[in-house]
Length: 273
Image: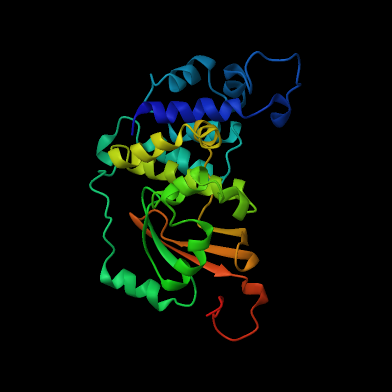
């Protein structure tokens, strides 16, 4: 993990806080958005010079107490604190960074059997680049009309979300879904900083303003469990409860529980057969 990732996170999160967010007077209009470095330093109980060294990548050994104080000053939530801690642990400690290695794109027969056994509940396997690796028939039948298998998606959930012309039409809470895939890519590049293919996906997405803004803001969210609302072209509006199994893995199983609250029959028969 490069020092720049840690430094960029500090700068980006400082820019997202306003004086009134931390109990300071708004004062006159500022030339740059967010809190001044001196203000964050005062809130964290460190010197402005020390915070400057962290933001410029000139200090690679902040103590746990300093990190906790800065996290509190930046008002990070638990998910953001976890990400911040991973970035800090990686500073100048390459031996603690997991090797990127080659991403596994081939799904084992056992994993395929697991998602097949979930039928008729839609389930699929996604890779570290948000690339679609495997799925069961239920998920294919549900996802195909949304365009997830169209050429514009390039077999990638993140690219679909930002590049497909109908993604915003079908995903009624598109912003939340966009946050989810951006956060997943951020977690992946933090864990696999030397993965060239992962970098290529991120580079391909950066011309899209909505992705670029999220990426530069270093937003991280809890994408393990969430709800999606989709205006499905064949099934109408549906609510999906998403469960992500082992999101830190190289291959992740995602289960879509569709309109679970409306189901009256026993079991998990959540889609039309």
